[in-house]
Image (cartoon, rainbow, N blue to C red; front, top):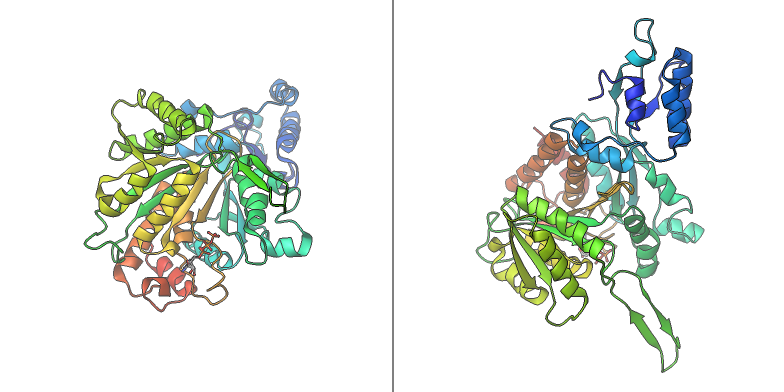
Length: 456
Ligand code: ATP
């Protein structure tokens, strides 16, 4: 993708330069932003070219962005990666030649860096299978494991180190297993690990495909894969999980707890826009889940904002459905549902129902998308650490592998994501190598191997 780009163009695009040659030391050992500029400065000086550009960049702390128009056709997602995480991706800078000088230096793309947080329980069993499948595609992604989670908490009193968020900020994506263990209260494991990541990097969309795969038995009588193919877009930063609230008179009879839902126009709108975009690509149908009959403020705002965004997408047919009716509809008429946009709480509950419709929680995958440039996105199976089956090699790895496919697509590897999804469909349709939750006897690793074998 970067063949033919000069060092100057790379610098202008805010791409981190890594020099394999004596020209520049590897940037990976240095802080990204200044390392980029230092190395580029060094290279430009050595080649006697464009020092002004570098000075300008050094003086200007604001990031340099790759604009949408310069995105490469067919790899459009990359422009979003640059905007979001512009200094984390690497290209290598070949030694300057007598003919080329700094302006003629060709650069080429190298592997995305993925922060792997296997976490707790079965998270540690399913994530290696996802990595196995991605490696089998022939992609040389750079996976770096970060041993955070409840065991880390028990050793250190923290779910992840103090510097964790700035470390994660340097990666192209985060691949997560599961966080939580019975020895650590859920509110600690959630509020000191997953939620700070989602909030800091403004992973404002939680994307959840709900698809019944061929070969998998649906708990709804008479329903097959053609009936269950939904895409949930969950607002992921606020609502009932905003964290606003407190307790007073703790431990007394007068104890009081207040938890305040927070709904902002900005968060609803950006999430709705994403959902409308996805609906436009798919069937042109969108359900907006609400409860504006009983809730007099927050869901009224929700409806108003979704209604406003709808005016920009006249070709998308929007339906407003109350959350209770939506739960019933998912069971009674799932075939009428395509893209769904819902608040943090409502989508949390409805997508667990969705996982049940898929035939097993072990099949469900999700992506926490940071679409505005605040940091990397995070991809994870929907299930938790499953202490009841952890350590026994019985966990279904399909949800984690599918989350890997969502990550590939997000990073611009559409064809590879399609190959992984096709392998998942094949293994499920054949039904020979399945874990216990789907009625099979295979181990986690055996399913991983079968998925690798089914890659086209
Ligand atoms: P959390 O609150 O972290 O979401 P949870 O306690 O609600 O977790 P899980 O840990 O996901 O739920 O487990 C719920 C049930 O689903 C358990 O019986 C568990 O064994 C089963 N389960 C979860 N993940 C898998 C998997 N990958 N394969 C097979 N069964 C699974």
